[in-house]
Amino acid sequence: MDIPNTSALSLSQALATGSLSCEELMRATLTQIHQTNSQHIAIVSRVDDDVLLAQARQRDHELAKGQRMGWLHGIPQAVKDLSDVAGLPTSMGSRALYPLHPTGDGLVAARLRAQGAIFVGKTNTPEFGLGSHTFNDVFGATKNAWNPQLSAGGSSGGAAVALALRILAVADGSDFMGSLRNPAGWNHVFGLRPTPGRVPNMLPTPGGLEQLGTEGPMARHIDDLAMMLATLAGPHPQAPQALADDPAAFTPPVPPAAQGVRVGWLGDLQGHLPFEDGILDMCQHALGTLAHAGCHVDDATLRVNLDAVWQAWLVWRNVLVGSKLKPLVQRPNARDLIKPEALWEHDRSLSFTTQDVTQAQHSRNELVQAFDDLWQRFDVLALPVSQVWPFDVNWRWPEQINGRTMQTYHHWMEVVLYATFAGLPCLCVPAGFGANGLPMGLQLMAKPKAEWTLLRLGKAYEEAASAMLAKRPGVLDSAST
Image 1 (cartoon, rainbow, N blue to C red):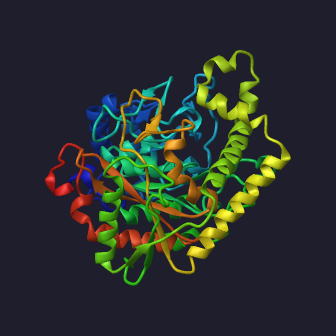
Image 2 (cartoon, rainbow, N blue to C red):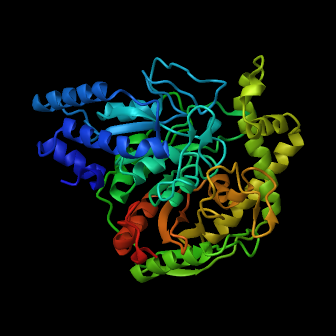
Image 3 (tube, one colour):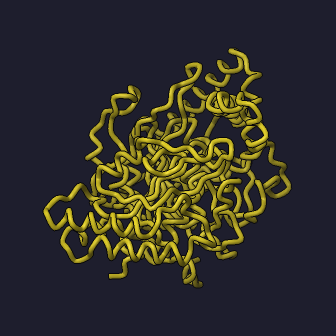
């Protein structure tokens, strides 16, 4: 068995039947870590090899006695370093916090552990998960799986790179402003931002504003993605806003479905969004694959004041981020340890009035209505996952795109805010490789709660683009484009 390139579900089956041992899988995982992680820094807060091998042997012992915990029994995992894992430090990428020593698991770790996962460490993230570029002063920058001189994206950069480098077979991410979609697209893997509430959000809601961030699955295969969603999703007594739907509905196999699906291409939003050369063409090529699979693809127009939506987004985001950072910023000398982009979010949040928040809500309602109008004609809407190709890992963020100045440290990722702000599930699929040899992703958005539609379409795309999707770092050739 080619363990590093085997899907999570196939590994699970092999472990369950005894054709693969948990110890063998752990040794293969550690080999991948030793060969790649020092250069790419995907996994942080690593657990010692001897400890992991002992845990793997314990999982084998349990299997021998017929005690299988779940589908992840014996499968290595690493939770994004914004969430707690008992026994591992939490940093959130911040010197102001590191090291925190949680005594219990957060929701993601608890649900993965209940299925038998073994935690090899955490996946790297930018400070507080802010910014689509995974770097911090605790562990350094995560490098792109396809070119270690370039950014991995973020904030789930560690997770995406761990998947692309075959360290992990499946991973968790979280998504506020494209935080799992962007790194998925930049590292040639799948990422699903679920409908808000699909995976319970345990954070309090400040000032009546809905929380816009959500955790979700990342994988190299759609069936693995669906199984991870089934594991993370489901109600929780401490999250009253969580969706009550049975998460078992996402259990694979996912049947492919593209025939007759109406896909609307939003492109550059009638010139509102600048893009680096080649990105729109690459994503339209991916749409051609969907059309060949049976989709009806047509141009779509989002009829709303996009400048007003951007300003509303800034208000909403500043308030949410500022409320989370406020207790930390108030500590003595804490500001000296926090990156300026985070302080900018916090400081701006202090200036907004009730009228500002009310206007932001009005603009958001108009965005939701504009999408509702499009759902009369389309089942799925498509956008690129990024406006730029992976950039120099030493940059903090791109300051301009094709001569257009970016207003903020995240303005270059405006393309991902629409699914977030409208509360839509969104699947990022690998779109292929540009002339520069770098990966790009395509966002596929659907109505709220329509994750199954996206998964079925994603499965059809996976089958239609199987040769391109099989490419992995180090073996890229001309057939990839």
